Amino acid sequence: MGGISEKLSNKSHRQLPAAVLTSNLQVAHLIDTFFKRLQLLYSIEYAVLLVYDERQTMANECFTSTYDLNEEVFVNEINAQPATLTNQQKVIAGYSFPVLKTAQEWVEETGKNHKPLNSHLSYPYHCYIPLETNNHVLGTFELHNSTEFSTECLAFCCSVADLIADIIQHQQNNYNSKVDQLHHVQAPPAVSNIERIESLEDLFDIVIKLLPATSNAVRKQFDELKKRAEQLDNATLYQPEEPTFESSYPNIIGTATAMKRVFGLIDQIANSDSTVLILGETGTGKELIAKAVHEHSGRKNHAIISLNCAAIPANLIESELFGHEKGAFTGATDKRLGKFELAQNGTLFLDEVGEIPLDLQVKLLRALQEKEIERVGGTSTIKCDVRVIAATNRNLQHEVEQGRFRRDLYFRLNVIPVELPALRERTEDIPLLAEYFINKYANKTNKQVTGLTKGAIRQLRNYTWPGNVREMEHLIERHVLLSKKPIISAIDLPVAETVMPGSNGHLKKIKTINENERDHIFEVLQLCNGRVSGQHGAAKLLGVPATTLNSKIKKLGLNRKHF
Ligand SMILES: Nc1ncnc2c1ncn2[C@@H]1O[C@H](COP(=O)(O)OP(=O)(O)OP(=O)(O)O)[C@@H](O)[C@H]1O
Image 1 (cartoon, protein in one colour):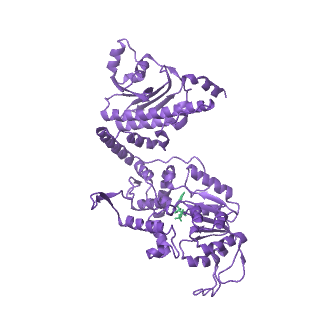
Image 2 (tube, rainbow, N blue to C red):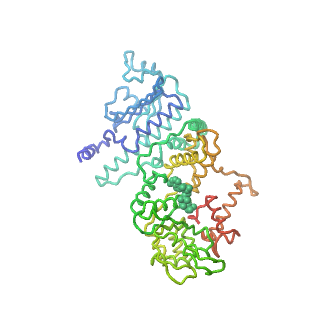
Image 3 (cartoon, rainbow, N blue to C red):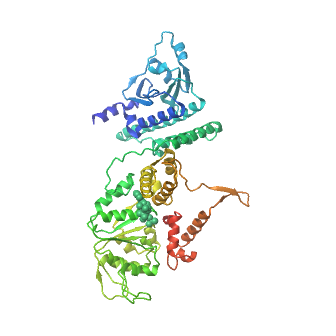
């Protein structure tokens, strides 16, 4: 509590205690990333970031980064102890616009007897950029070099300074709002852009996006710069960080919070016999999760039997589920056990459970409730000790509202819902997944492919992945197979839109054959409310078997959740 009362007593000055700025958002790491970029792009040798107190009499924090040319290493220092500004620093703090100075000019301005206080004065070229937001200077971004600064370097550093100022302001607002909350005062709104930063790498892109659209010359320079940065990334090997936690599910890759939540849930529920409903878009790993639940349950020594309800014609689902007696229907030449019986004492995984026809839903409900089934054409009931895990990429609640799925069955299945995030919602896992699939397919195909460049990782992270992890797995598999080098340096992603003039003079997108097919299937599926098979299903309208349509849906990366 002592700490908080200390902060409160400082409230009138809005003075930040030491290390408040460094605590959140890892500002120090951020600065480090910027400094490294500056060295790589413009050979900047020495950079300093000073953060002032409210009255600009003290430096609350000071980050310095020196590049040792001989050792080719960065030496970083963080000083979070408030220190009184030197005379020279006070002069700098008064600048409200970027200032360039040579060492000679410093000597002339400060008198012949001036002794450099900071080692950086030994560099001949200096640049001071104020960190300014809302007409208030929060600090200064300094660059010191043996060679002159180029115009593009200065333009870049000014944008970096604006962004750093935004970040510091955001930190201060956060801090102040915490203090205000303690005083029951309405907190000021936080600064905008900052929440969008997902990783340090993204900052560079954000700086570029922040550029004013009007300044073509500057934008051109930055485009050039971005190209150079990308070239740099394409030549630099991405080195994945070691995962910080031991996973009990080594074949399920995921460190994003949503995935950790899923792992926690599996730990909790695996050993019970409750029904599990796994929800998620196509290719998010629903089947993988179902298998993990089974393998961590007391039933692991028995079978897990899967049935993809969308992959078989509606009229055959019943006998697939419950089996049939000899002669039960035309073609039933032998008695056949259904999936329930095959999964005895084990687990039954019902994939695409939303595809089960309404009339059969009531029989499934009975099987779940009574724990007994009746074969098609049979007269006696058979006890089945089976745990059911169901999965769907449909919005089942919506299906219930539309009368296409029985409410009682929905509640029976939805005892433990497990929601899997789409890949685009957990981009932090993309590097790990890429590494995992590279290893998997390099081993499988005996190819010497060992990693990707930073540029390739950036491409993967920027793509939207309509087909989720499955799409990514196939893409990496293809790249491993086709790669002639040990490091994959660029990813061949689905092509960007191409346009041509339409008959009305407007630009019209040229669709590929695949895109045409995808859009047509999408429209028909929308018409059929997402139903694939059956009398009113899309497969019938499109004149193809439901199995063919399903494999097309997967291949084209369509997401049935949106139908
Ligand atoms: N987190 C993950 N880690 C590693 N591999 C994954 C992960 N998620 C999915 N995969 C892989 O992606 C592919 C698709 O996964 P899966 O079949 O489980 O998805 P699904 O959600 O059941 O798809 P659908 O709804 O289309 O049936 C599989 O090869 C699976 O091994």
